[in-house]
Length: 269
Image (cartoon, rainbow, N blue to C red; front, side, top):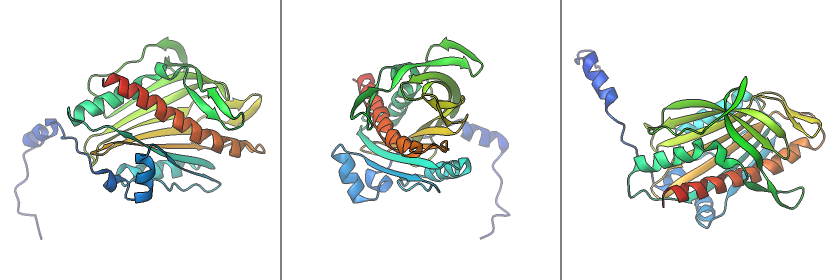
């Protein structure tokens, strides 16, 4: 049907519509995670993981419009290691979706609160310190420590930089991007961390600048938040290194989910 003769909305009116806050919407968990087996595992407190080396293809993406953007971005980076992990945080929002979004965003902005968290080391068979140091810095070229900031209203996009030192890969500068999608159904927020400096495992080069990325995607459902972590790398051609990264990425994602869950719950008490 032709719309050629329909009147156009005046530009001023369009501007006013743009100023109207977007109503946040969530979907039932079954819509975002249609696989009943995955839902059962997550609702029981477990997680689901997938890893691949060589030609990377993501396989655990939730049914969420932003998933196609994540897949396209990962494909453009052409990694040779990828690990996905999906978790679920029960968190109904009786006080409103905006409150839940702001609380979740506030946690992800707390870079300094990552210092001291632990993850399970497969090679050592025990818990190990993840971040010995973690804080925001002024810029990639200015490592002056600056405090975490938590905007009252989460912006659509923001970028900060961090200094983080872990026991496996030493100290490195990271670029951290935040994105909020209020107009998607369901609403979501994402954090992507990318290494700015080259990374080493002891004296062994592991990844060049911008060769490693960790994405955390939080997708809203009626019952809580789906936590989809995607870790990717173009790894150095060192025997055993890709396998080490595969083992490490999944457990580090679990540590990040544990950190997020604890801080999120504490902030909403």
